[in-house]
Length: 107
Image 1: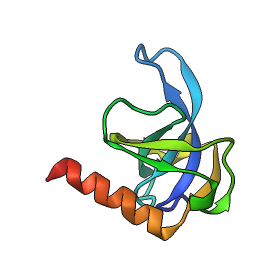
Image 2: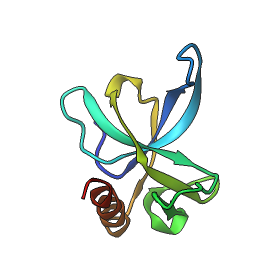
Image 3: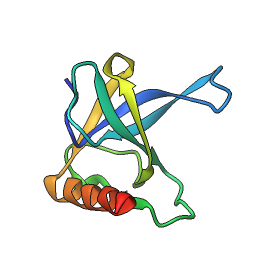
Image 4: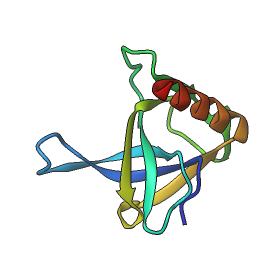
């Protein structure tokens, strides 16, 4: 079961929808039946200001290869059966920061 704040590995589709690449994402909701709401995670700093930085010190469990950016403007729903692995969980304080950034997108 996937929970809010879990960092997961998913097969992320390319624009052409013909191929996928394994990528990290973060759950911004608890799993609802089969679906979970996720945001894209990237190692590259985005050009916009719609991202939240996090690193190992922001994790309550797990580890990252390197610090990363959570792209809160890259939000999507995925069937939980596509989630290959949970690799970590961010602290509640960081989850609140992500939630606040998400809310700003819609206000």
